[in-house]
Length: 226
Image 1 (cartoon, rainbow, N blue to C red):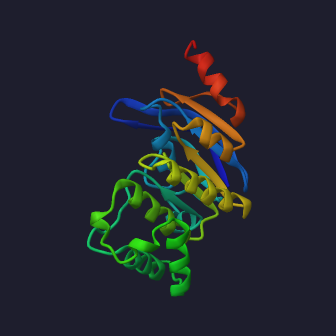
Image 2: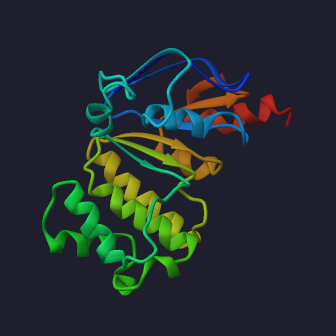
């Protein structure tokens, strides 16, 4: 699903990522960890085709994301800090719009998606009045309409209360159980480790450690001298 060799990108003279090697097969579940500025979000944006690498090779589903954007992009969905929601649309109108763009149909499915993320009661409220947590729930529902085989989640537990965080765990669990491939960038290591089998720790844009997700917390602690 993902092949990266010597991947790098820089902003000005500063390398944000350098010499990153990464291999993910279909069905793999990877946790990206690291301090702020370590390159987690940048790596997700490269995989999603939103940034052009300055060095190395990157293939997503056998395609170069920035050169064959339609083919690579059709295989994935990115849930990030940028929600790209229209404040004047209601939650239901948002899903209707996205459903039409994705070529789907069926009002019943949209109702089910809103129920799945706990937004049925506010289906007809404008998104502009939503809290950060409600907006996060809505973009999770929206991403399901893309029928992705690869799901990229950037800090999926942020802005959510404990109930919302548990909802994300269940929601992602169903995606994984259906055979989806997952990459999660998160500071919530304990929660995210339950969803992932492998982990990569980034430090200053480079891979500092990789191994089983269950061993990440201890490995990070050793590197931080704890």
